[in-house]
Length: 413
Image 1 (cartoon, rainbow, N blue to C red):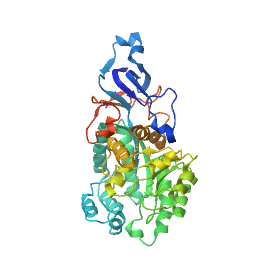
Image 2 (image 1 turned 60 degrees about the vertical axis):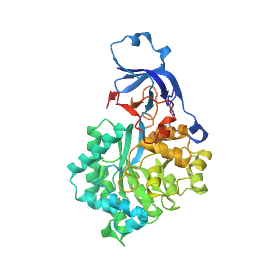
Image 3 (image 1 turned 45 degrees about the horizontal axis):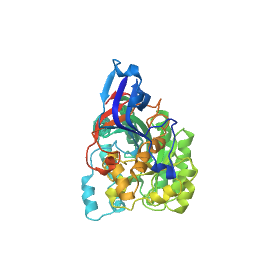
């Protein structure tokens, strides 16, 4: 048993847990001042105001943390990352500074294809050690659940290598991990001019192999200009569905690609990026079970326009936030900074950003029943801040490290 007491403010509390928060409701955040939080084993057992703390807990011989002046939040759920990768790509970062676009770098053999080459030449053990360091980094920054994609393999052997690394991370770390197969991240150089053959390889070989080893929860496709077409995307999603892999989509980062509509059509859990989102895309998302997921780190790093989040929320949509942690377009897994970008660059209110990075991003990972808020029976993934004046201070102090104590599965991480 663990009791956190004298909490200045307990943030994102729910008596009746919600699976999503949408539209105008995203501007509301439930909190309790001068609170306590009781954890039993790996679950949240109780919470409330300090004045209502049960008498027997005040003197019980259990582990206690005094959180005077500090706040407690549910851990971030980061629903879109590529953090299993081999080495960095800072030379391409210089190319971007010199004015080359994301597409131009990709056409020169950079981008995803560069990461695929690096990964091919890296052993599974070394890939695991590099990725483990990143997992430990994001845990320290307050993330308690993360989705990790493959997609830097682009061959059956190397895609499986990535997914096996993700499985090892699941087995050896306290963070909650969901795994996504993204063989359709780019077309390998050897398939240039033969894209259809690579799609057939994904459908007929990769997906059955991934499913055969039970290595993924979801299947993803980069459905965008210069990558995979709507028709190719739909064929891959259908193949994934046959093997029990629900869809997630990279959509509309570079153009109005039709990816959002394809994702909704095939019941995608989320459609992600969404820089190019208009009235038709919003209409297709409204009333669907697909979570629109915004990745402001990528737009920030690439110098792109940000998605029209205010129009989306005004239309009644929910929004999730994720880091897109990857070596080429968003080399950071700091979800607190993602909050800041959402507020500064997209004019989201702090309450909207916090809802998007907890309850809604948990939904985008398929774990909203167990993660994303402070509710009885949910997994005890929380963090305690350093002394801060308000919860709005979290995105406001955009480079200050404010996460002091991390608790995952009821234990200090």
